[in-house]
Amino acid sequence: MKRRDIAKQAATASAIGLAAGACGRAPQPERLALQTDSDTVRWRMATSWPKSLDITFGTVEVFCRTLSNLTQGKFVIIPYESGEISPGLEVLDAVMAGTAECGHTSSHYYLAKQPALAFSAVLPFGLNAQQRNAWLLTGGGLALIRQVFDKLGVINFPAGNTGPQMGGWFKRAIASTDDLKGVRMRIPGLGGEIMSRLGVEVKNLAADAIVGALVADELDAVEWIGPHDDEKLGLDQVASYYYYPGWWSPAETMDLIVSLDLWNQLPSRYQAAFQAAAALVNQSMLARYNAANSKAIERIKSKGVQVESYTADILQTAQQVATELYAEMADDSADFAQIYTSWQDFRQRIQQWHAVNKASFANFVYANSPLETAKIPT
Image 1 (spheres, helix red, strand yellow):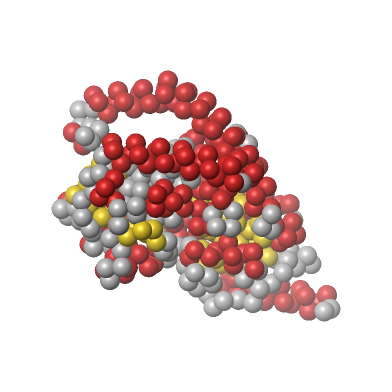
Image 2 (cartoon, rainbow, N blue to C red):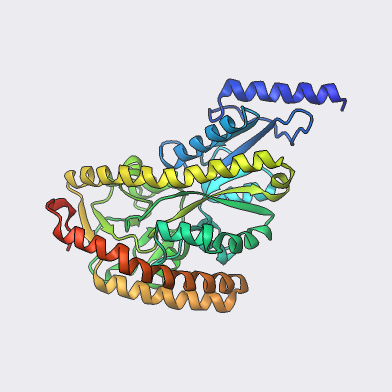
């Protein structure tokens, strides 16, 4: 191809991107490789989220707009909701296959490929959002996880955190571990494995399928994220019992994943802009969820939903099963064992620190708050 033809092709792609908007809906474009003559890059992003989830999909849109702004419209990524490029639980597959140049997803959907990817998302009874970010960004966690992604031809970037999640919706009350036996529940990742060991029949469905499965009586229970998203999906209309805490997800990190070959082709200034935009949304998603969930939980309560705590029996049994599961996985996987050692050491240190400072303060505030709604539920 002649030099002027390359320039013409890149200019056309840029015009299409600007007309559609950096994060607008658009017909699926032809995939364009990096054009070094024009410095214009146009990628597609597969995601695990329906567009109706304004925080998860909205975070992707913020990322894309920020990236475009930082590069003066030269690096344009068009995001597609779950099912448009790939099913919601197959985003990693799409990036590995080259169907999409990048994706936004939760890595605990892909434990069948590599169990150690759990550390990129969340471990039950693990770190909270502050602790996860500290371990990933300054405690060596991200470097270890990237060694695992590297084997898949992918590089990952933390790009969102849900904060503490809720413990799921049930059609009937759950008062003990015996009540969990035979329950058909949508729950992915290691939380799903633990629930399976407690007698739950585990299903793994994308967000856009879970309400329909409950309505069709294919499920007895589901977990998603928290009050804001759960209300958006309509879960409060199809199940009567809402449990807490979400012990399987004290804080879940969302990943931006990119083809490693394409990442290495990017100019360093585009790589820097990409990382800056990812860092921004990694914080903004958490802020948005904390603010939105505090309002949504009150609306859900006002609708007559029974918001209940898991019993000590369930929590203690699940935690014991989790500890046993991690030991087994470390025996079976060298990658898991290596990261688990780092994760355990960091968790012990930071939880000791937070027990001295953060937890002691929080316990005092909640126990002595003049606001009845701020009391710790019993």
